[in-house]
Image 1 (cartoon, rainbow, N blue to C red):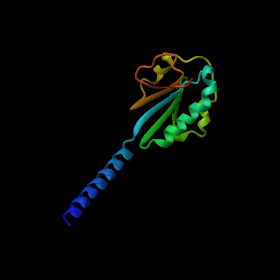
Image 2 (cartoon, helix red, strand yellow):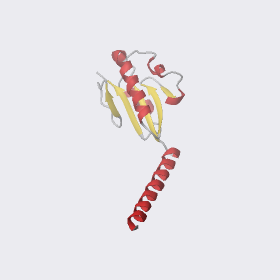
Image 3 (cartoon, one colour):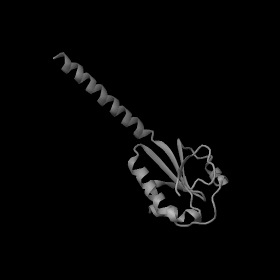
Image 4 (cartoon, rainbow, N blue to C red):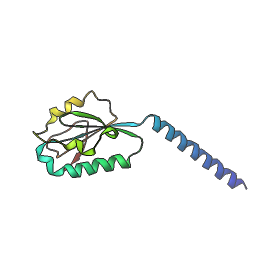
Length: 129
C-alpha cells in the first residue's frame, strides 16, 4: 500500500510540473526570427526552404515565429495570407549587410536560410545547396 501512495505522489508532482511548464511557456513563447535568403541563386531551392519552414513551425511548440527575407521584414508567420509570399520575388545577391536590418529585432533565436556563401555571426544557419 505504501508504494501506491509514493507512486501517486510522484504522478501528482509530474502533472503539476507539466501544467506549470505548459502555462508558463504558453504565456512566454520563444521568439524566433526566421529570415530567408531570396537571392536569384537560391530560386531552385525555394520549395525546399518553404517545406523546411512549414516543418519547423508545425513541429515546434511554444514559439512565436517572425519571418522576413534578406530584403525586408514581413511579420508574424501565422498572419501570412500565403506561405508562398516569402518567395514572390528573387533578385540580387544577399550579403552580410542585408542581415544588419534585423539587429534591433527582439528574438531569442535567429535562423537564416541561405546557401552559406557568407558567414553569419549570431545566427543559426540552415544551408540549402
